[in-house]
Image (cartoon, rainbow, N blue to C red; front, top):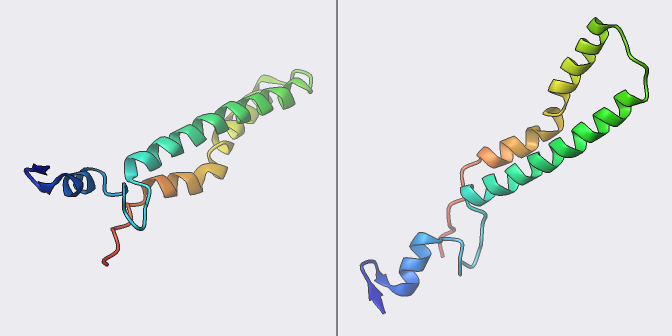
Length: 97
């Protein structure tokens, strides 16, 4: 069946370049979806671990607690730097045959 772009296969390849390709790659939208899921799971695990660790100690002075929470507030992002870099990469162009 012909479409405006030629054959149906060519139209599918234009809309979804990774489908049916010899060298499939992950598109930017898929990469952002996977990265968002990784970040969400990491935040849940990190916050539960932080709460469990902080619960082991008795209550500290308000300034010490504020500093602990400020450090933990920035510490979650350090292991995720590679994920953010990976999510922002431009998709690899299809290789010429």
